[in-house]
Picture 1 (cartoon, rainbow, N blue to C red):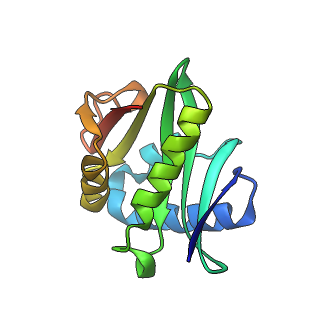
Picture 2: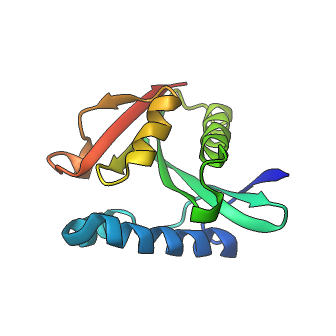
Length: 149
């Protein structure tokens, strides 16, 4: 049974999953890794989730306020052995629900061109492509999305 637990970036399971995510991104991003790693340094994130399959942590996601009324989805990850089971969509739905509870009306996010499964996930969950925003503006390998809640 899958359980999604709300926590923060100090939770050890969230930290372990983010370390795995960063190792994966280092390979996928190649020469661009340092640029993206700097943007993804996890300061204190007050709103994170960890997905559990039984008692095993298998995935994560986070929220960070970008601007009033606008929240950014960050640090989405599912361990390789648990992919293809809909866990990422469940994490995303959980984060969106939390966004609504917090009073946000729109989510934005950035993913990489070298993450085609992430792009499919967001498109499947009704995210629409937008011009690259903030530090991602002009970054060729970035793909940005939004969703009205």
